[in-house]
Image (cartoon, rainbow, N blue to C red; front, side, top):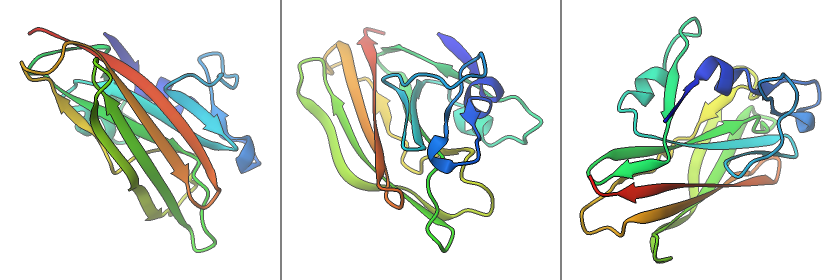
Length: 182
């Protein structure tokens, strides 16, 4: 398990620069971080996919800015545990009316390569933003998973494609978790 301080990993990793197409995630050293399978920025649009079992992740996320929320990132899930896949969105481009439109596709594959979930064209985030879109936003679509006894044990793969419909950019994010006996 790895606990991520949201101040360090979610908000401080946002690179706010003058040109929106230069936006990107920052690493611990303050420099632009390279893209990884689960965290990318393309043409100034960013996405990050985190898997957690924290039952209070939503409470942690919705805290005042003076509180340092923490979200535990996991790689292993026991049968019966509930996990959430948290898609973070960074710097979506605003339409001239101030509205951002982010759509997504979600594909979850079982260890035997059969498909558990395949949804396309979901409205992940549409809203008129009062401030800058350069902060980190949480998708309105939060996939959840409960491993059942009959589910195949092993590595489950998650692919989420986030599309900034105004900018015309997309990021494909991949992560995985291993389902084990409880």
